[in-house]
Image (cartoon, rainbow, N blue to C red; front, top):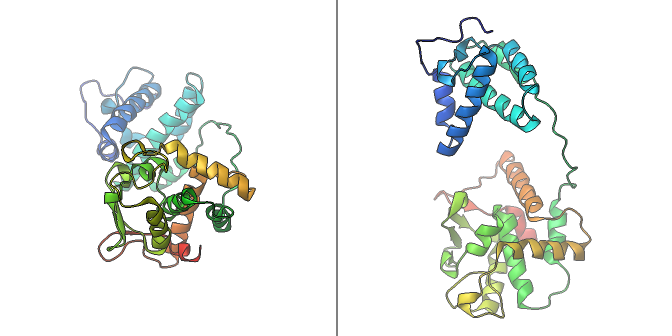
Length: 285
């Protein structure tokens, strides 16, 4: 037992828990609250909700004990989810000086059970992406489309759904921007160094309304690509370039790494209007 952690008449929500839950989405709040209920019950040895638990009295030794208790009852993934939730509360408690900093750092050293994972492919390098986007000899309009699409994928870390969801109306070449309206990537993006590739595709595509990236053998209303096409394009170009591990997710990871690298070197990834800028290295590709 954890001393007097369970207070039968008191249902006080610790500030640390409230602060932690406020950072989450409504759906995550519900699931994390249930995980914290499980943790509180395991530590108290009786059914307890997170609101009834004295989180400020939690110490690193309790985290280790919790991990041992959970290991006898739950799967590896569930245990790690519960421990992650508890660490989040511990972090907030430390910030609010409700627990000693040394206890917080000691708790962070307590690892959950190991989950074996498949070995990840080697990370792509900028020169690998150059080989992908060049993709062999130019064969026609589809290559212009694919190269513009891949340039946006890498330049902005767009996911495949965002790419195929773009319409011609979202592109403004006079301003040099493209607008994304949906999802967590909604915003205005400055295409800058990839303007030439986009313009080459538009010369092939024409100016009819509809999806920006389309099938060349379908009428406008039926021409929108599926997200799978982006993955297929990467796979085909990877074979031509003899690259292993080239995928949409691998290109996006490379994009994020390079964006961080440039920012650490002093590059600003937003312009004076707050619009997101394209990776500068694409001027060389």
